[in-house]
Length: 106
Image (cartoon, helix red, strand yellow):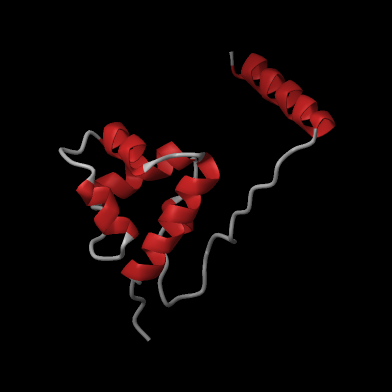
């Protein structure tokens, strides 16, 4: 079968990702430089799809590959991404890990 994008499921997934990151439709609109917030609501409602340029920018904003945002009728290439709240110990370890990576990259 030919792979197709499901606009409705993509919109639901987009809303889920935004909620997990504490982003509003207005935040996304401002990040992308869109003229009105209605475009983002149309994506969330499954009426329209973001352009490939906007999907590329959303993947940067969400720090996810495009395949983790778009939903369709093929088997997912990227496994479902879940976020869990880190306890204090894990948060400290993660912060230390980020600092080490920043030092190594410099």
